[in-house]
Length: 185
Image (cartoon, rainbow, N blue to C red):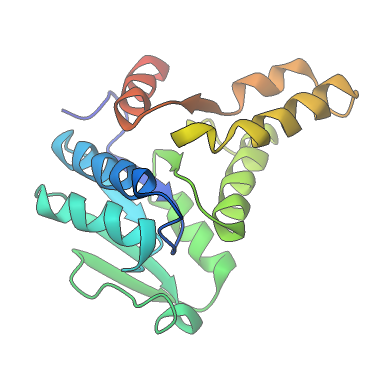
């Protein structure tokens, strides 16, 4: 059953698999858990890397999976045409806006610069009061620990208030992410 108030979750993650199979396993675990919780998965639309793992696992578990991919990435990221819905959009800004509009919460798995960009934008929008949706980072093998350190530095150097601690949360596993979603709503 979906956590109260959360029926659709956007997952940001890499189009690459990373160097360790633990990242792929975490993505598949998250996709399965989202589907079994009755939540819709919204993601970047690619079939490679962690994007492929999370979406294929959600589909295999009977989930509703929505991919949103810019036309220029359609071939490069091998768009998954077997999704419940696949939206091809003009560019990255439209992709992020559509992901935002279709989601009640945001989860970031490990990924590259694109994942960082998408995650940071949702955190920024939350800081600016544009939304109150949860932003959760799956801290597989301490992947997001340096990101947390940057935020701590921003606060300790006086560039933000300590309430920035409420803008996002780290979770050590896909199950912990679902537990946090339940606790935040």
